[in-house]
Image 1 (cartoon, rainbow, N blue to C red):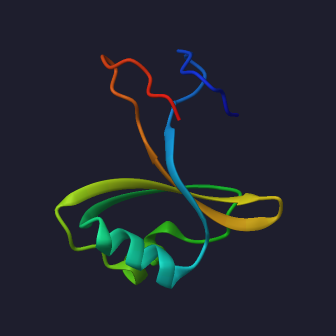
Image 2: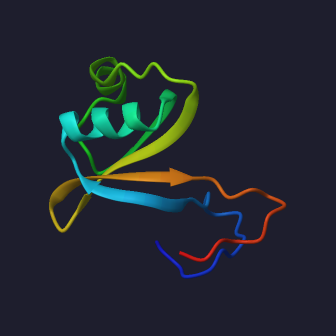
Length: 94
């Protein structure tokens, strides 16, 4: 489910999409390395990939943290890089 503005609901956890790309192990590894990501939260929706195995393959080693969602869009595997909005900050425009 997507929306142009953040609306609080007890039925879903909101995420703001920062980036979207076709799934490619090499491209994702480069993306995370360029952003110094070492702590990685991996979520999946409709993906057959195993998050524990993917984390091993990515081997994040930086100081920053990130959350990615593995999903399928129009039948193709995609990676969404997301963040949880701050509970006190107003929603950001995309």
